[in-house]
Length: 151
Image (cartoon, rainbow, N blue to C red; front, side, top):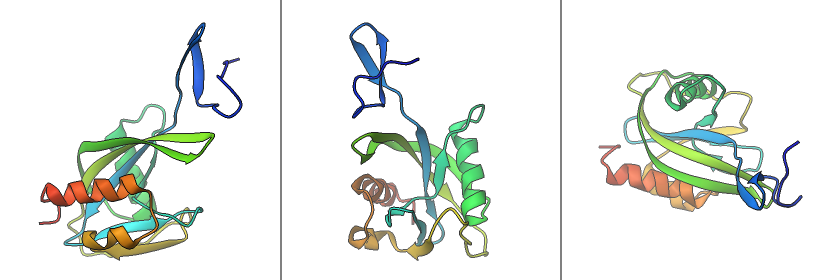
């Protein structure tokens, strides 16, 4: 059995006596450019989030992301390189490592969201600051704009 630092910090696992390190789920997300808009999904916490999901055993992050986008939006996208990473503190006892990629969809089919989410919107990147979503998602979207991703 793994020793944790405390019940309040189950993500900190003791590796050597007195030495604790993160043990976190890994989530890969995408800022997808579809023309000058991007899809966002509403989760069970009523927050808007980027498409993507948890890294599964045996999958590369890019393959996980392509699969998740196909499942969540019905799109086959081209995924490029990761460019923004952060630890999301969902609640005090639940943290997730988030790795954000750029992706592009060049098709004509509008996205269709899966049962995993409550709602889907297509927004202009400039409008994300007014939405209820973690600040680091907003930062990732602004960085994508700065990189010319929506040009």
